[in-house]
Length: 142
Image (cartoon, rainbow, N blue to C red):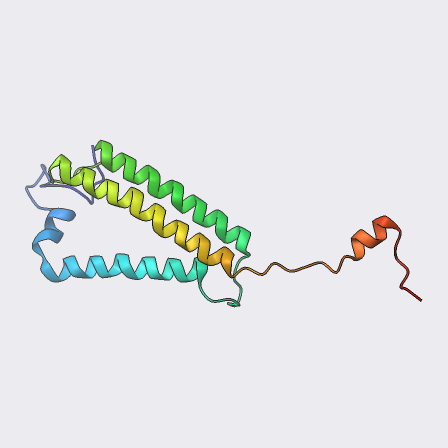
């Protein structure tokens, strides 16, 4: 069982699909790689790009999105390593090496993204009026 768009020869009509076709189509192969790199760069810019960006979610919200991405990358790489839901005509050892690269490489890059985001984060400070109100120190010094 595999994804219909990724896999070896299609048994129904003998046509190639997915990765097998990409391996033979040189320009398309590089275009797909460019797409992955461009999507990763755009994702990194949205998550940890320069502040202030208009209509950008808060840092905690972006950290949650980054955490979800970590979980998804981990699950996908473990499925690839185990060979589950994968119909790619490559030796098992190559699939495992690719899965290890995806697992550890994604962790490193996502940790760097999180570090870049929180190292430049300047949370808004409260003026302390709520604390002074609770303590009964509302009066200004005379």
